[in-house]
Length: 121
Image: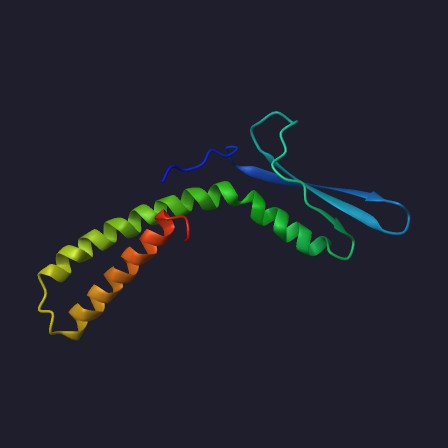
């Protein structure tokens, strides 16, 4: 499945607060670190009461490019490990508990990879 294009990372966050004298609105700008200033990836807004959650959400969103890259790397490594273990399991006596456990883990890893590739992981 092709990877959708997104604004290249890394992304950063900054907070701007606007107050009417009673309550404040917190604007969390998420933007690419190495792009023109007019590119905004997301702009979560929160009241004073919800600002901690908004900040956590903004930081999570900003980590998306790094998480996507690490996800792809882990997917490749898991696939390589499953292939190695396939070969190992093929040479084992399948009556042993270790061989059965290993085969089960390989099948589980392959199912996980299939879900990830299908966009469900």
